Length: 300
Image (tube, rainbow, N blue to C red; front, side, top):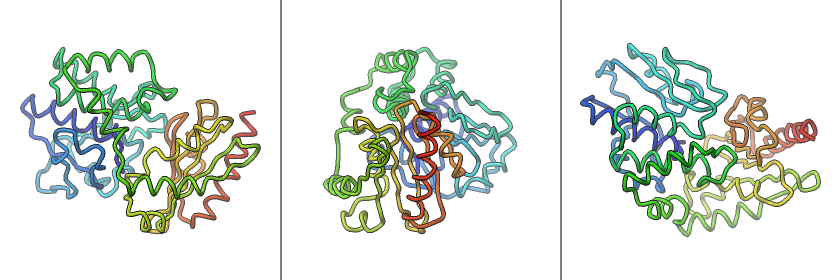
């Protein structure tokens, strides 16, 4: 399930490699979310790996471990050379060459360094993709992972002629009615625990069916739980169509939710992480709440 950082970083690197004369194929198991389809080149993404191409180099973008590559996890290793470009602290360094920087706010910041090695001023398509990557992974430059360096990069990308207002409209100001109705149902599920310090939202397959929303429109709903005054841990439980449950953890920077996610074989960052559980949503709620309470107790 690619986010703005994954899609933006992939496209920026693909554009750069094409400009330098390389033959490039871009793969993603899932469809590019609708809110990101304004980016130039999203039609390049393919869902079926071309085994006959016998690639010299496979590059994984914004994936903390090989399994995050989904159906491409085995094909990825078939190339002569493999590169892993990522910023997750939980990255398992699974490639022959690993370009991993947990201090980067987004993988887009790492890709920006590569771009600058080739040109002082990226083309508009690259700049737009990178701005999207960094903006989405910093919550519009509002999350605690945002640094002065993030702002400097953003300023340089704006100097490339991108339309920031248009990008922000696509990313943050455009909602289908179906998504708004899903949000209504999600917020009605909001439950607070432990003196309102833990907030949990749940979204079921029935919620998606009843509203007509799609899975990509669940993006960022977890922040409604986290942003409540007094809440230290915001959690979203998302029931998948295969019966598993995906968990999104968010904190305001105090509690390290990447460690919380690791208890469920997940990972991520200090303030944003995720995991998957092979159980029903009520069982997942009980297990996650138990672990969250321990994390809260240890923090305090």
